[in-house]
Length: 295
Image 1: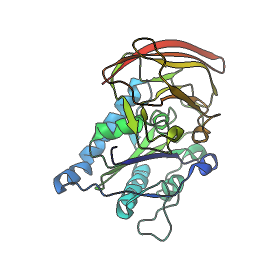
Image 2: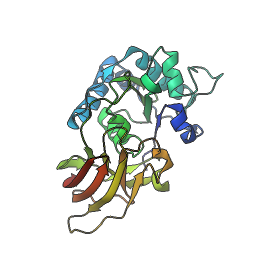
Image 3: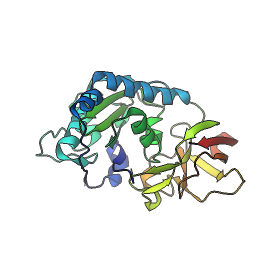
Image 4: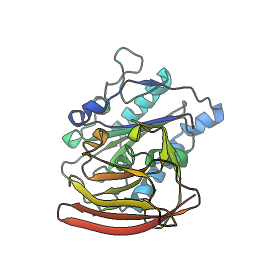
């Protein structure tokens, strides 16, 4: 198992208070001074932003721009996690580097004003490669829809020598942003999809390792109803999966527009899969079949 931890948390406190967990200690992942300088450099921050926006634009979502106050909040939390060897969205008052107990508090302490208290924080610890770090976040059912959050338009990117990456996303304006009717992941005919995901916190379906989930997002704020969501292998056999939605998974309680199909075991490598989906969101309906290939 890869030795790193990932975790997400939307920071609208009333909606997410029940999802907070105790901080987990994390091992150190020593990197050499040259790699540490590269990982924490402004150039690497730009690389993170470019890679994140490439993924968002693949789904016809607006690109994110760096925001000074979110940048301050994200960097402060990255430094805090590295200093104390923790994996958490919380901070403990009295410890060095404390800037706020929760992501929204830290963003406000940095001077950020968000409409309707909408800030989301994601982090990954133990990876010093940008594509691998973003792939890890995208593979998790409690991260992906925040990276593909249609309302977000601003971001801060915190980098530490742990090595660690903290993303603080903000939606500065009230009301839903223009967004695609539907967001499908993997995209139709995607290639090189990782067959295995792991280390998500909280653990989806109690699993440390699982196949990379398939997901569908309806427009923000519109409750998604799934009539059929199935993953089939190249021979047409159904892959054992679990459907994760707001009404069945408390960690998705505030994401009523999202559904994840979680394979209970790793997918086969270099294999072609078919997804069958029938869903309704308000007056919008979707019936779709599409394919993707694993690496």
